[in-house]
Length: 223
Image 1 (tube, one colour):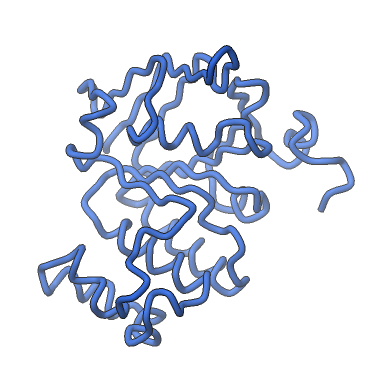
Image 2 (cartoon, rainbow, N blue to C red):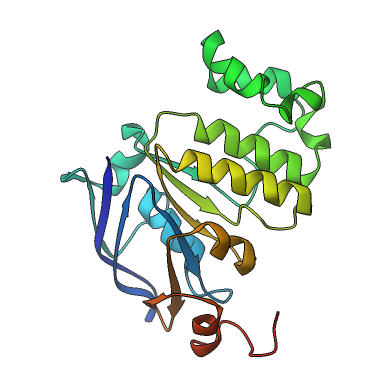
């Protein structure tokens, strides 16, 4: 089992605190949901852990070993799914996969996925949002990184691919720890075992939809 431990995470822009003294533990088997209204720091939190946004302060430990923010990407301990695609849009899917997996056996894990085999000859830029998100998740999920940071994996995708992605994430958690943000709270709550909402720069533990209403992420009449 791998353990990611984040403590003393602080981030401000000017005099405005975005995240205050955040602590977070994620271990193999966890899927942790992070909620919050736009601008509350959800995406920033993932980028701080991944090391692409500089923190005012942060302590990152993986299996009790301390990592600087700059060391996270080279360490290959954490993979990150941004909101915007990281795949070259002009290439066909079958040409993209070898960029990440030079070994043929590793490529087969992607190519032989039932969904991917149906669009492997399509250019990345011509995929539906659901196809694209699924492909991206398959790629980073099959890397050896023990932790995944996912920024809005369900956003704007077709319902059929939401179900496929949820199945994939439940499979991936058998060997990884996952932290994700998304506004599609029904989908998130279906698969997570821990959830938090960011409110006034602080992290608050929640259990269900009622807590999302309580902490003013949802209106009481939202379904």
